[in-house]
Length: 284
Image (cartoon, rainbow, N blue to C red; front, side, top):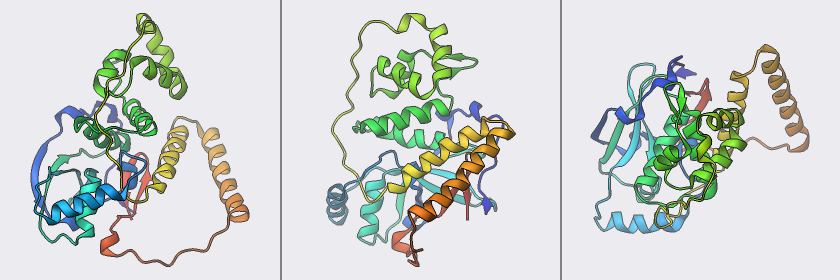
């Protein structure tokens, strides 16, 4: 595998607010997809069909949002962050024109959670409604990316809610207790006054339905959680996780056997085979 980004010990210092953004015109076939970067867990074909008609009729859409990353040869690789319905509509009608994109220059070593958050945040800016599962995963990406911290201190739940917008600060407190209990303890010590009173979550507008099959995204999120556990463990813990994974493979072969597919990936079915390693992107 060829390394696209290298792990960086200073990952938490990456400032997502100051990323270099440029408007570029590129070919649709230059844009790569990785399902784990889609902010939504489901997509619906009705929206794609509406967009197909609109594109065919000459409608103007906002630029797609892409992450621009340099591969091992220094060439630019564009990963789709936001605009999955628009992208799929253009693919379906065999779009032959160049495409306008908002390209965010991503530094080497940027964790995957940062990119997941960038795409999800764009949905909030557009006033689109995320499902509860989508909101929870966006919150998890936000915390894993350490955006809930100011230096060595933690932001309050109200400050986090002002950024994420889609849920009350009390709900964020509940999620933090369940998903990141150690962080919740630290935040309770720094912001004791917050966990009282009532609050009303801010709505995010109408619901945008989704696109094709994103079933592998769930597996990708599980892989990230297992990887995070391994990174936080010592050698003994990592050995236990490796043994558990090996046992899982054996169990799958015994209880859920399958016949390997010989299906070939076509240009129209373009989904780049990106894998995960050390919280960064690698390309096969």
